[in-house]
Length: 80
Image (cartoon, rainbow, N blue to C red; front, side, top):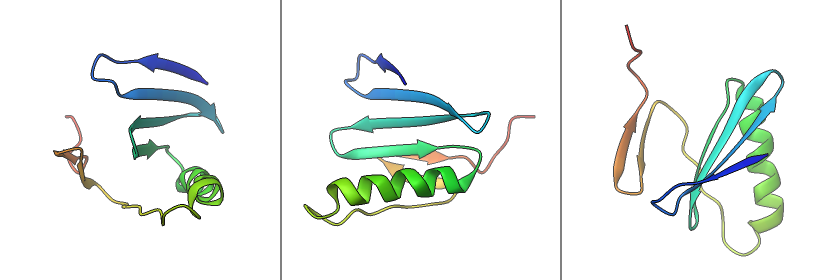
């Protein structure tokens, strides 16, 4: 996994899984996980839940629109 430190103190990890890039972005206890195949995201969420779910329940949101760290991320529109 390649980590890239961003000035906003958000960390990014990228890894190729099943011939597609998986990206995990985190800031403190907020994560954004993306991959072309939903089962990859499911597997990562399951691993995180096994590791950290006993401390506090994990919540997740799926879809094209998310409120994340005070921003609205809308992936419903594709570039022309």
